[in-house]
Length: 264
Image (cartoon, rainbow, N blue to C red; front, side):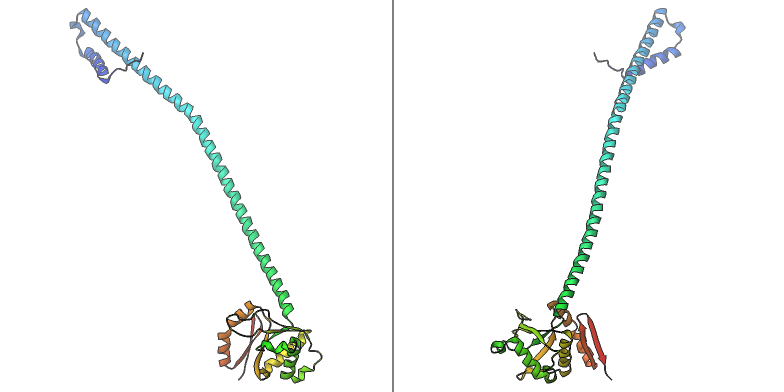
């Protein structure tokens, strides 16, 4: 059976009865009235005590619930802290892996650049003894091989070098594709000399003569460079124009080096 708490009005009435008894002259009460009043006060006090006892029990029950909930909350907090720790450790591991991957990627890039540089060095060394002859019609080698054609060009333009035994052509051939696809020009002839000094003597003589011909047709001698190098050299053309206007003799000694001579 559920016990009902005493209402505030009832408590106030009981308190008022007790206060009234204190302020009342009990000598004027009959014995019966006095006993009834005392019984009422005692009953009210008993009800108040019961109500307080019930409230105390509820407070204790609430405290017990809180005490029981604290370990569960603590356990949840510990689990959350543990998960946060695991997450932080995973994040730290991922960051370490990212750093390692970045370092490995940088090392790979450095190695790739080193390999590319070595390949270029090897390629340049293979092209070191080469020159390009530009402007020779492709039908010229129908009657004579390309090597013989190159010997005729050298003999026509450099009579003093044509019989030099130190200048020997190892091989000569047309480029497989047009050097500049955007212009309808003839394919270049690549001439490979047996020795580098012989090739340099031809280049020096061509530079000094400036105007080269074959059967009355203007031709040019150029270094045998990669397409990227030619593109890089083209970026220097404006500078060359300015230097030439100032009577400075400019030329490329190597794909990445510029030389010029000031006269006057």
